[in-house]
Length: 137
Ligand SMILES: CC(C)(COP(=O)(O)OP(=O)(O)OC[C@H]1O[C@@H](n2cnc3c(N)ncnc32)[C@H](O)[C@@H]1OP(=O)(O)O)[C@@H](O)C(=O)NCCC(=O)NCCS
Image 1 (spheres, rainbow, N blue to C red):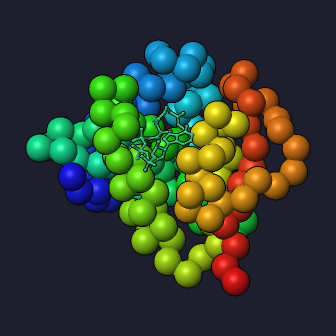
Image 2: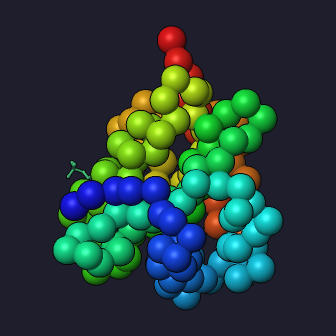
C-alpha cells in the first residue's frame, strides 16, 4: 500500500470513494459533502495494487492543519488503510498543530495518533461529531 497526494485526474477517484462512503453509506447530503474547499485542499489517496481504496483531505484552517473526509472503501476496512492515511496526513502536516472534527464513533481511532477531544459534541450532517486537536508540545 502507498499513500500519495492526488493529482487533478486522480482527485476524481477520491471523490468516488467519498461519494460511496459518506453520501451513499452514511447519508450525508451531497451538497454538504462536496464544498468550496476542494480546490484549495490537498487530497490524499491510499493505493493497493493500483486501486484507490481510501482518501483524506488536508487544508489550512485558522492556523491549523485540518484533517477532513477520511474514508476507506467498505471492502478495505480493517486492513490498516486508515492508519496509513493518518500517518501520511501527519507527515504532510509537518510541524503544524492538527485538528479534525471526528464522528464520535471514530474518536478512539484518532486518539491513537495523539488527538484529544475538545469541547461539546455537535451535529454535522445529522451525525454526532466532536472536535479533536493534536497540539505540539
Ligand atoms: C474510520 C476508518 C477511516 C478507519 O479505517 P480502517 O482502514 O478501517 O482502519 P485501520 O484498519 O487502519 O485501523 C487501525 C486501528 O484502528 C482501529 N480502528 C478502526 N476504526 C476504528 C474506530 N471507528 N474506532 C476505534 N478504533 C478503530 C482498528 O481496530 C485498528 O486497530 P489495531 O491496530 O489494534 O488492529 C474507516 O472505518 C472508515 O472509512 N469509516 C467510514 C467513514 C468514517 O466514518 N470516517 C471517519 C469520519 S470522522
